[in-house]
Structure formats: C-alpha cells, structure tokens
Amino acid sequence: MVVTRMVPLGVAIAAGLFALIKPFDSDLWLHLATGRLFWESGLPRTNTFSYTHPEYPWEVPHWGFSALLYGIERVGGSAGIELLQIIAAGLAFALVAGTASRTAKRPNWILFLLLFVVALSACRFRFVPRPHLASFVGVAGILYLWARGARRLPLALAAIAAVWANLHPGVIYGTATIGLLSLGRLAARDRPGAMLGMRCFVAFLLGSLINPYHWKPYLYALSHLAIASRHTLPIIDFQPAGPAEFKSLYALGLLGGLAVIPRARRRDYFHVLAWAVWLVLAIKSRRMIPTFVISILPGTYAGLAAWIEGCRSTPSRRNVTRILIPVGAAGALFLLVEDARTHPEFEFGWGLNWKHVPEGASRFVEEQGLDGNMYNDYGEGGYFMWRLFPERRVFMDGRALAYPPEFFREILSRSRPGAWSEIVEKYRIDYAIVHRDPRVGTGDWGSLFDGLGWPLVYLDGTSGVFARPGLLDGRSLDEVVYQIVGYDDDAPTLIEKARSSPLRTRRELERIDPEGLVALYDFYRFGLASLQAGDRAGAAAFFRKGIERYPRHAKIREEYERLFPDVTESGR
Image (cartoon, rainbow, N blue to C red; front, side, top):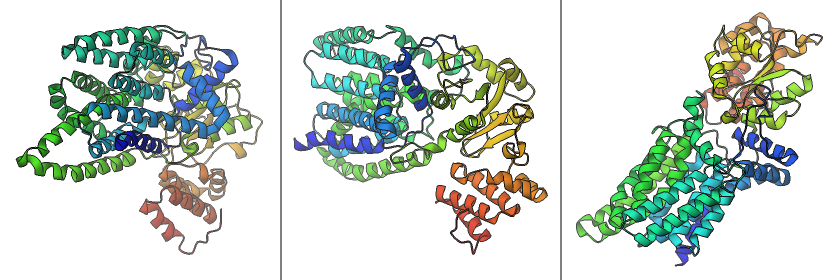
C-alpha cells in the first residue's frame, strides 16, 4: 500500500526531471507576445503582429495559456517558464500512475516503471512551454477521475472542460476520450457505465463551450489536421512519426497491441478503442503522440501485468518471466539513448537555450536602425513578435491560421531564383532576417536574397541579415557589409578568398563572434579561413569554441591539435 502511494510521487519527480529542458521552441515567443498583447489591449481579433495581412481575422483559443505564460514570465522569468513545463509533465504522469494503480488487478511496479521510461522517451520532445501542456494534464485527469469513480463526475468534468477550453483547443481530445470511455462501457454491455459516460460527455461538451469562441476551438483543432495540405507548409508538428525517429512510439504501440487481448477479456474495451484510434493519429501526426501514450499506458500496464502473472502460474512458462525484466530494462535504456541521439537540441538544465534564438540579428537591426518592411522566416516570426513589436511587424510567423492559405502557397511557389523578386516587390521588403540551419550553417531563404544581389550585413550561427541595395546609403559600408565572406561559402571557397584578400577577410571574420555560432561546420570553416588570413588567435578561438560545443566530435579536436600544437590558452 505504501509503494502504491509512493509510485505516483516518484513518477512525478522523474517526469519533472525529464522535462528539465532549456526552452528553445520558437512558438514560446509567439505565446509570450500574445499574452502581452492580451494584458495590454484585450483579446485580439485581427493579425495585428503582421504587416502582410494585418486585417486578417485571428482567433486565439489558447488565449488563457498565453496570458498565464506571460504572467509567469513577468514574475519568474525563464525559470518560471521552465517550472511550468516541469509541473505539467510531472502532474500528467503522476495521474497516469494513479490510473494504472486502479486498472491492474495486481500491481507490478517494476513493469510500470519500465513502461514509464519508454513513455517519457516517446513524449519528451513535447515537453515544451506551449498550450498543449494543458491537454497532457487534461487527458490524464479525465482517465484518473474515471478510474477513481469520483463523486459528481459529470460536474467535475464540466469544470475541467471550462478551464481547458480557454487554455488549448486540444479540449477536443478530452471530448473524444470521454466518448471512447462511453463506447467502451457500451461494448461491455455495462448499461450504468454507458449512461454515466453519456452524462459525462454532455457535461464536458457543455463546459467546453464556456470560452470567448464557444464551439470554435473544436473547428480550430480539426482545421489543424488539414493545415499541412491547405497551407502547403512543412510544419514539423504535423509530420508523420516515422519509426527511425520515434522508436519509443512504435515500441509502445507494439506493447499496447499485446495488451489488447488481455484487456478485452476483462471487458476493458476503452483500451482497445484508444489503442486503435490514437495510434493511427499519432503515426499520422507526431503531435498526437502524448495523447496516445497517456491514454494507453494504464491499459498496457494492466494487460501485460496480467499476462506476466499468468506466465508465473504456469510451470512451463515460468522461466519466460525471469528474462523479461533484464530484457525490458535493456530495451528501455536503448530507447532513452536513442531519444538523446535523435533530439540533440534538448539541453538539460535551467535557463533559455539561446542557440536557436535570433537575438543577435534583432539587436543588429535595432542598433543599425534598419527601417521599412522586414522579411523573416516562418519559424522565427514568433521571436520577432516578442522582441521587435510594435516598432517592427513580421512578414509571417508560426500562427498559420492567422494568414490566408493562399499566402503561404504564393510564398512557396515563388521561392526560387528568378521568381523571388516578385515577392520582394509585392510586399516592399527592405531587409531580411533569414534563418540558418544549425546543422550545416546555411539556409535556403538566404540564397534567394543573395541571388538578388542584396548585401549581407550580419551573420551569426542562427541568422543572416540582408539589406535592399540603397538602404545603407550614407553609412560606412566597410563596417557593415560583408564583401568577402559569403552567406553560403564553403570552407574551400572561404580559404581561397582569404588567400586572395587576407586583410579584408580578416576584418570581416573578426566581426563574427564564435560565441554566437551553432553549426560545427561554421567553427571549422571560419577557423580555417582565419588561419589563412593570418589571424592565428582568431582561428584558435573558432576551433576552441567548436570543441567546447561539440566535445565528442573527434575531427575538429584533431584538426585543432594539428594546426595549433603549441597554442596557449589565451583568448582571441
């Protein structure tokens, strides 16, 4: 009994530690900016953050979360934001553990902890401070209250729905969960249970309508299922979950499938329905993975625990159970390692992960006083909404539904040399902040402006800034424009330029701060070019920072030791 009570607490602590990830998600800034706008001027109605479509209708069903997040940031800073994601993850999985303890006939907590590790590995990529955290807790809370048989269950669920509907349109997942619970009781011919489920369904549905948009959060959620096709946007959240990247999902899918027959024998048809429905949706769209995991974990645990108990009671199968724990532990450890390898962008610890934030470019634009219409990439628009608004408005951002679908189709159809000038002239773009791929230090959108002959005026590991010719008239171009270092130059090209114009190359490379670089290749190519330009100290600084960022990468360390066998530890 003591163990049963302590496991949810231990699970909450472990899940919280897993969620101790430095926030880096680009939508974090979008929600902070939305929350600030709400507290300053109320609920927005149009796309006021953008100059391209400022009058386009914009509905914010997650307004409550954005307002809460902004309040937390004002009080607790980045630590408060991270604490929010820790509390949400811990609470959700503590509720799952509580549900599991009421689902299994006999507890097998070693089995549950192994499944829990796999579940955390599957969900960890969604432990980011965004409104879907409310849906984590919401789905887990519904299942816990149902398993517990809470008094006045319909009233409790109606209250949960009223809060949830103002935090995240994922309230539709709660409605679907209660619907599956009702259908499961109906399939089990449990008439009282089915009637209770119907009352809960109606109460939850009515409670979810208590929000400024009433029934529209449901349409908002459903529209996201078709967002990738309607807006022709390659949004990562809506991409399929492939087995190479999401091994933990497929492992849980297999284990959940093995538990289907034992749970069906006990007339737990909710597990059967939830496994079939949510698994299909999770494979189709990776953002559905946590809903699948939270929904099927208690039933998977109970079904496998019953199967293991049956093996123990059968002499011929008793030896099977002796190898399950070590095999399961090895499998869980493997999935944890794979998760860390697949998602290297997750950094453990407190504070924001500034590597993926275009702060340097924002500061440059402000210091240089670049005026006019700004181009920015889709993923970085949220940060500029937070950092540069209202003095500067964005070209586009991660709020896909705040723009007409034809806008994104137009952008993508003309994102090629020769056609991009039409976009530049139509929207009167004066300067561009383009995202650089942190893996290779380049970006497709930057090459479009480079191809138009726009000068590169700023470069770091996250962004490049291009200015329309003539925008910088009257300024010292030698101090701003990169005339030698190109946006997409590879190492051989940079080395050749350094050989031809060593002094100019050296001056331009001195403007690039190694601290602001991200891609391993940037450290390597800028280091070699600096060495060729005669700046030995600058080259060593690039290599040292690269070694610090990538301590396990042997090639850059070997190259550093070869080029600087007698280098001192002095700074640049």
